[in-house]
Amino acid sequence: MPSNRTIPPMRASLALSAVCLAALLVPEQVRAEPERYRISGLPPGEPLSIRAEPDPAAEQIGEIRSRALVFGCTNDTPSRTTWCRVKAGRVLGWARRRYLAPD
Image 1 (spheres, helix red, strand yellow):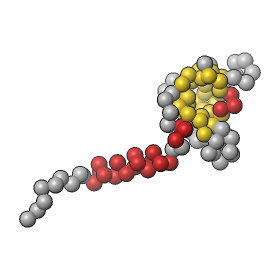
Image 2 (image 1 turned 45 degrees about the vertical axis):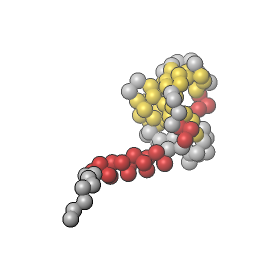
Image 3 (image 1 turned 90 degrees about the horizontal axis):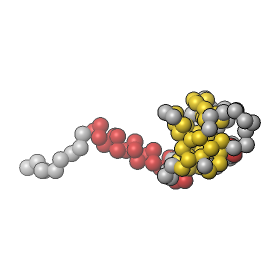
Image 4 (image 1 turned 180 degrees about the vertical axis):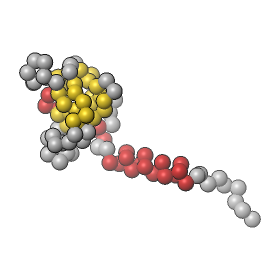
């Protein structure tokens, strides 16, 4: 006799697996509540690059002109320098911690 248990569709199971895997791959300190930061340590008027990955060689996907939301920082990066997960406008990426200061 067949069981009355419901088996989730394969897509839902795969999506849940992907979410769990992504959570494991993102360092804990990067999954914090966002805080407002401002650019610091750059010449006046010079924007801070937002990169696709926490690496200076990664594709530049945007810029921070004055302020951004910071979701956490990590030095678990290829260059061993500290990078922060940032959002400026609609752009979500990575920026060097060295040039960010709490607002």
